[in-house]
Amino acid sequence: MSVFPLKFKPFGDGTLLFADDAGGFFKADVAFLERYAGNGLNPNDEQFLEDNGHSFREIDDLAYTGFAYRWANRLYAPTNLDYVILVPTLRCNLVCGYCQVSRVNENAPGFDWDEGTLNAVLQFLDGLTTRALKVEFQGGEPLLKLEMLERVRDFCRQRFDHTEFVVCTNLQAVSDKAWSFLSAPDTFTSTSLDANAETHERQRTITAEKTQEFLSNLRQAVDRFGTTKVSALPTLDVRNLPEPTSVIETFTSFGLRSIYLRPVNYQGFARKRFAAKDSAADWNAYHSAFIDALIEYNWSANEPVEEYYFVHCLRRVLRAGHNGHADLRNPNILGHGYLVIDYDGTFYPTDEARMVTRVGQFDLSMGNVQTGLDRTALDILNAEASNNFHPDCVHCPYQAFCGVDLVDDLSRYGRIDLPKHLTDFCQRHTHIFDKVFELIYSADPKVQKSLAIWAGMPEYEAALARVHQ
Image 1: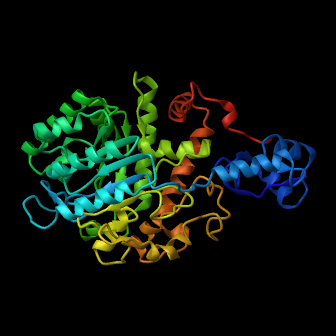
Image 2: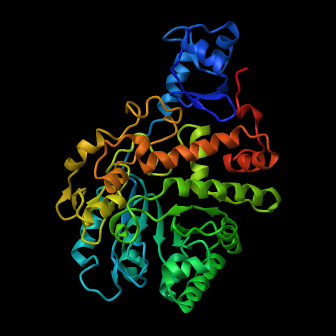
Image 3: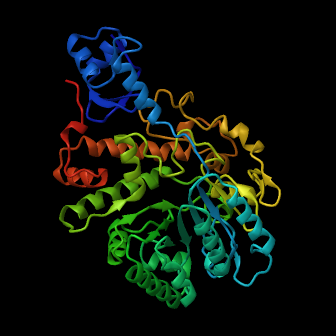
């Protein structure tokens, strides 16, 4: 019998967590590790490993084929370009201190698509081979160029079999025309709600009057369109974090049940006001406390609440193919699965790459809609876009669930070869996966209730928490 390579790490209760390259995992004691490392597995060990898909008899037997299939499903393979982020303007009617795109004043000239850029964008979209397309409008404040949004949407509806549109708006000033645009069944609203009214006002709206305008518009959006069409995301300053319960109370007061916690993004011009050396430890402690607060809330709540990114990571642990979030894929090939078209028609592989370029760190642009796509500059980066053979990742039991974010490394450190355990990306995701497995192996019924809800199961399954005795 041959055993697929196992990675391991201390679990915290005297046992170790083991995982294979395909994401199969279990807990066992140090004695098992010694037998495994010393090539002295006993019959009980061999039976457990065989029953749980960690071993095979022959290179072409069903167990080997099944493992290879599970391993391949852990990888993300970009297909047709079917998701574009469009930035028709950098103008904005707010002055948020953490804005990473260096927005410009609402009346500033020269920061919008012109007619030639719009036509070139439509021509580019017309050349896509996909039959289904998701378009996300960003800014600035994209509703300031509502006529451009309307023309893009009209074109895409005629050109593609299925379309979905997301408008990333601050909801600060919404005209009747804008409300009508947002009301379409294929159009979704994404906005920012920074934790609670006090934090939102400090970071975004500045005055009580503007805060109330936003809260009124958010309430109207939820009432008119429903929570399935409206999402709100908080951006939090690690130096001044709100109480988790206040965040939960604020979001649930609007009927919003999914909260995507985000620290201020150290990208672009946000670096001017926020220190380069963000404290991953402080954020991780807060994030863990927030998950605990959600578990307590869900125990007695009629409608459960989730932290979006934690749930995404949980589902990546429990099943392959959960690749919906573009920033956590493996490989994370830049410039293929989706791309960004900026206000001046420049292509970028990600929104973060746009920030890195705008502050003059590195040029990660990929040509322009007027001249065509050019991915040449990304070829070297994409050679490092996988963690499968990375020397800092090959021994990590979380490798199969994790990914790569080369743009974040470039932005923070100016290089992509910093030892992974020193990077913010690795420190934050190691914490998240530690928390995921802490919950999976918890006997607390409160934990098990939330875990089942977040995993999409009718009830907690003890078989998830495999232990080799």
